[in-house]
Image (cartoon, rainbow, N blue to C red; front, top):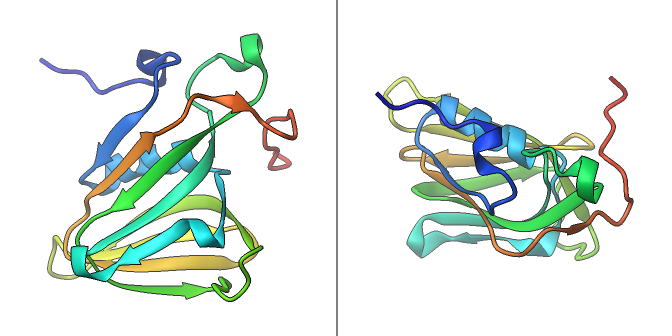
Length: 157
């Protein structure tokens, strides 16, 4: 019998995780919460039906903060089977705009496996992907580095 992965299983190893269901996507959502990126670090590759973001992801997944302090890591978040992309509160004309990811959510259509993938951003921004089927990958691509703020993101909770 196989068991679900746990945060502790990853230790300090780089992440390379996929999502094919809404439940899988919830795990990726937790891992990319508070990730930041310049608006210039996302791209829709229409011919490949792919949407990708290069994130500066806060490392929520292990207890290393006690040893190393607050860390971030560069990570690719890639969605496949993308038919269309729409956004609100995101200006590609402003290359200095910084986006902050709050959550990822999959909303299935009445005829699965197609649906909408909603990327909710801080400041009332959002990106909506129309997908034929949910397929996402989150992969760390650099070594962790000290978060510039030196602090863990705080949501006032």
